[in-house]
Length: 508
Image 1 (tube, rainbow, N blue to C red):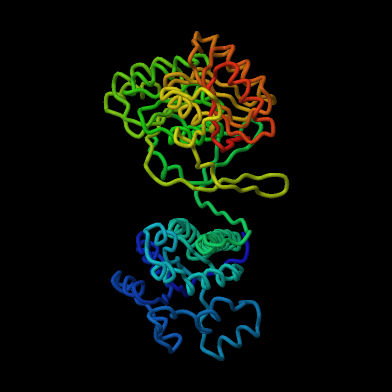
Image 2 (image 1 turned 120 degrees about the vertical axis):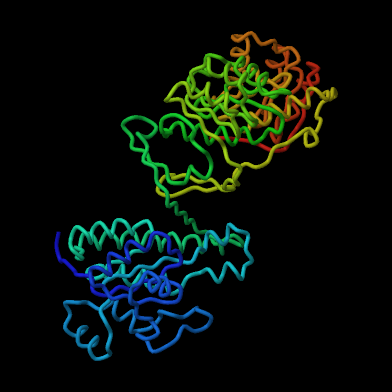
């Protein structure tokens, strides 16, 4: 510890007053003089403490509807003055400026105002000017000034002042400055991103304030951290903390289940679906989703789009799984599913998710729009003599939803609203198809009358021939190859219906 500073004068001007009273009481007991504005000034007086209005210090009232209150040399001079510098001391004396040793200030709720759907004028008025300037000034002069820029830091400052009888040390002030610059940089990022929505500049800025340190990353020798607020997305009802791999799988599960309106269960391993079924009720959907691949389902992530009841919970309870996600659970279901303490149960909240996705790559960041497109029967252009039946079109739509969320190269086989098998992440589309066919046979699926969806075009006729020999009767593919006609000709030869979606769904 070094360079102790006794707090004598404090400027306090905050939007949110909750949690402030105990700190004000402590500072008053330690002989601190308060300078304040507007509502905060009244708040301090109501606590029974003396306070000097900033207007008395500056000689100017709050003007322009409150837009200008603290922007004055007598305020910023007191904050920015360098205490060891004799010339600064002389100027403070000359102009009657008190040294301000502590600044407690927060910022107008810009993000909250944007999220509320407010008008642009209301949003603009919540761009803080004085507060952000006070934060930067006090943080810059951390050698002599303490800056508290968030109500989350009130308790921490109180503990330091109690322990050190009203003094702070350089290490304390530097740390508060770091936290304050985090507040100001996040605030500016939010403002920029608001303005950057229309005709955006080619600039990447992202700021997440909530941090969750994970047990480790993808593997035990890697460190892992989640930046974001999971509480906005889920209520965690049971189980251990989510791991890095859990989070990656949960993200994939949420993206997949949002494709379905009918009662659906999906089981994922390593971000790929190993079981999916849509049925009139969730219990049957669960039974048929598990039947797709009960081996891979072990230790997986499970998600559905309806309330889980007692009967469904009893069946799910027979399986070892890592995470279960649902929008609702009955009390009986929770009693059953919470019988194992490490099992993670998440209750999903209905909030909008980001429309952009990004990741670090090489020495930078790569960003894209999320793949929000899915082609249903009306978008599937017939390419063959035999046209797909209504049942086949519905199954092609079902399979297309799954292949969109499957690692490329990907093939998905489906029948009657149930995943038969998929070929995942292969370097050859033929290998992906062969993998899917073999897996379907392993679990006893009859592929006669099944359909196939591909995430990208068929540049050769071999996949069509192999699929037809396995009993597949309809294929959906995006098309776009200069050799499309070869695949169409083979489909015609084999009596297979083929539709062209016009949209590729690579997922790397």
